[in-house]
Length: 42
Image (cartoon, rainbow, N blue to C red; front, side):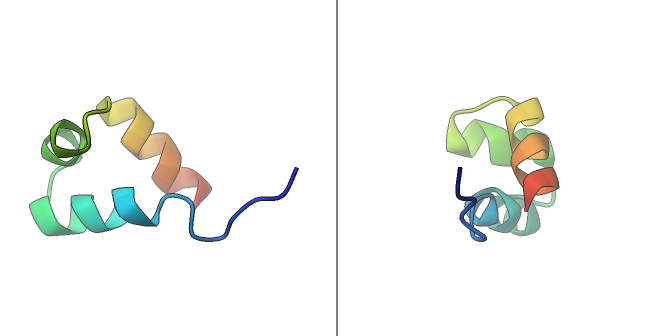
């Protein structure tokens, strides 16, 4: 399975913009856990 090195970039930028995992998750319509996991994989 190939991993795209940019997977998680959208989530990272949303957290940076909103300075909050919770707000970023709301804006992306996912859970904060999903945002955290995506950034961890980045």
